[in-house]
Image (cartoon, rainbow, N blue to C red; front, side):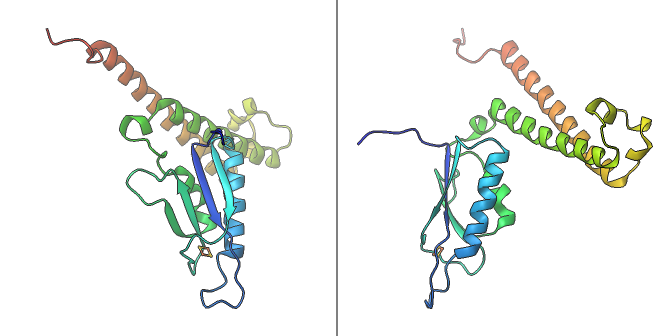
Length: 196
Ligand code: FES
């Protein structure tokens, strides 16, 4: 026996099937669909080495809705088991506080920065793809000057672009907070020095 690398989070998704059982049919297809949704979301976020998703048999809850998921380590202060989990819950499940982290740990700036960058990148791609459906061949520089392209006078495109602008504003604000926090630590010391 030897220790092997482990993920930061390991999700076990029940896709157990039962036939003719008084306990019902099991999570079955609902578990399959949830498993697929989680796998694809983890791939999109490029977290496949950090977050493992494994299909499993009955976890003992057997919900009538959705599927049962076990999440290890459990988020601080909560159960490791989630029941009635539906496909629409996949993102929320992945965004629960990192296991074992509390306070400043869970707010680790590098983790936040990584998440923000990934989300912003996805939305940027969405905005560009949508723009290219309206006018093929547009570049990101073009998209940043939408008034030069009447084709971009489209409510759906403006909506997507508005979301991207909002994301950038949030990122800028958080970076400002981070810089202020670092400055406060530098100016106030880290508390390691004695009081005299
Ligand atoms: S069949 Fe899914 S938890 Fe029992």
